[in-house]
Length: 447
Image (cartoon, rainbow, N blue to C red; front, side, top):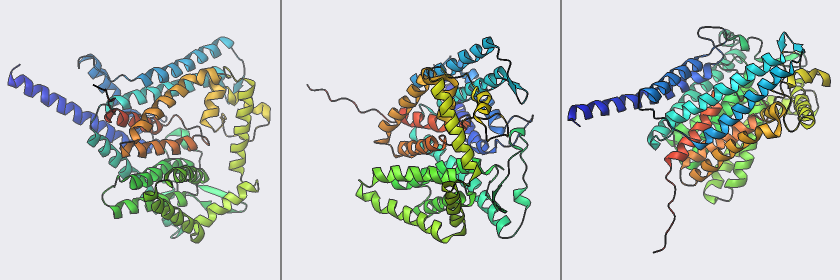
């Protein structure tokens, strides 16, 4: 091989690496903006970044020697998507005449299956861009993700302060251009009073809470594990920033998710005396925030309303989860077909009247759709990722950071059915990529 040819290959490889890394950063920058459309009323910025990733993947596959990253977790996940495809075909042959809000059972099943195929494709693309990369690149991805999150959290805080303190409405009147998100509001009613919830750029505040909780968990675990962002002062400020944003969001879901992770983490970490003091200090700071700030008292009041059965949002969530469990028990093995819950929900005396209902619990969502048998590939996929992530976390602090982030998402997904958000699958891909970057310990052979 001539030196000219070698230089050309090195340049091509370097350019390809820069392009792949740049697409990952571009995705992270665009990921919070799915409330806004770009071309039509139903697209979003990250969708177009994933289209670019797909084009690069096709280029590498057909023009780059046919190479792509293949992982055994793909087999489980694509099998799960195949189960949904088969279930959708079964819905087609059943020919159910029932319609709801102008949608047939086949329309609903097809839309959900396409969503699932989309996120499965997104996971495959993410893994191909991240896996096999050096740790330094994965740490840079983590820093960019946290920087984007900090910017969004800061905007949410400014939005809350500008309205509540200064009565400036400019930042709370940002309207989404994506048609799927136009009916939501940033105000929550408590009797005759209406309280504003920081929604950031999301317009719908619960999505902001969903966005913030894993970031707060990652920032706290990173500090404990010694993955310092900038310096200790900057990192502490970042934890405070995310904490304040969660409080101003007034999201009970986010608070419960963070609280559940804290309980699990404390139960595990108090055995490590080196970290016990820091964990207890974080808990004390959270207790002070709840005790002395107006926002903390408002969240406490909402918790009291939940236990007094006066919070309509939580009552709706609880009833849908209960109904979802009933539908699952009656169709435990193969489910009722993708999206079939929406057509059965009215029979149980529905509370929700805003559209096609779902169980508001991702695990019940899948179980009601395809049953226990259909969910086996998903369970195998999750076990595969968690097992490898736990093994990597023994020696790689960043793996521990993302594993606890997955715990936060698991709790959140127990109260919502937002499994179709690509950022969840990006987190899974990061765990897999970190696990691939950590060398496996070699067995000791006696001679």
